[in-house]
Length: 80
Image (cartoon, rainbow, N blue to C red; front, side):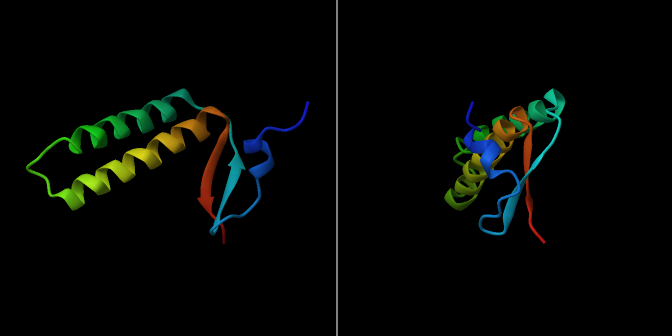
């Protein structure tokens, strides 16, 4: 069976980041989801500036990406 795209990216640097194999952890994935939900909620608060709502949306996207990586047994980190 050919390796998945994620498996092929482990150890490959891209934009100064690389992926590392880890043991999937449901509690860590849950925390990322909780953070993403809070940031998504912030995007709907009109009292927050448009710039901060955009920032909250960006953070939510990143947290959801980290959730997906965690679920597949990987994490992103800055390469030295």
